[in-house]
Length: 389
Image (tube, rainbow, N blue to C red; front, side, top):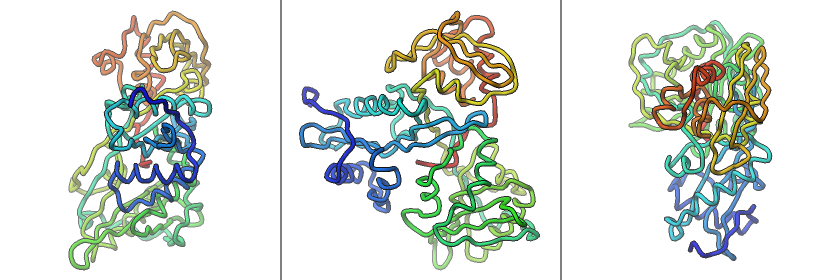
């Protein structure tokens, strides 16, 4: 198989059908409509690994942005990576991913993903760079909240009224997506059960919640929160009351958050459990653009880097990152006082990793206090992503 010639290309209708079968075998997720998935990502953003007339695998790359330091940085969101069962074990996934990332580099300085296998993606320069946590709690343990604010149900499959409230929160966190219609559709038009969305506020949308009702025993159900924004305390109280009022038949509520989760902080007692804790991964595709486009604290300093990147030689070598009152300039050259692998740069870029953790992992070596300046420049809220893609 390794001697076969193959190429990575955008699939036609026949190629998409072959890729759909491969993904069905790879993920065993019967509720997903891969046809809908392809349409949401965009057929032009699909890639297949082809040898002759055979499709051996493929993937999708959302064209997204991700917020760092209050600014949206273009991101290639890698998803749906699959290799046909008979072609596995020969390094094809790694080769396909590398070629696809090279193509994505033209429009996005970053690539992100949720890893089904960490080893594969680390071999391509990705590193764990943020968290995604799933919590669950008895709905009866929620506070009653307050009904002072207006609460309005949105029509099915509607998301435009939610955008401004989401972006207001997203810019203040690290790692939230700059959502496209494809991501919004995943929230309000799930592949399985219907979703319900409610906005709260008097004249403005100060918060909202979108959720599904998952069947349980008898007539009882579980509330699965798909998206939740609370930009004021009053909005939080109104959303709490909305959820609390579901308790007659809803026994449990599940939601996606982070260690410093605001909804978790509103529970009177620690009645929650952590159902799942996952780390998402980031890849710096273009060092110069990634560093230049990110937001920074209002400080003035410079850091001299020496980057190692086996996949993209354009990234390797010495760089100077100068930040003046929060505005960044990136240039070739400098003293290279912080020697780091591109994986370490990704993990620190989000504020997820520290100098100590990257040094212990063998991904960073420094002289003096230069590396600690990176921690200062990349400091911010806990990096987490409230979307799965």
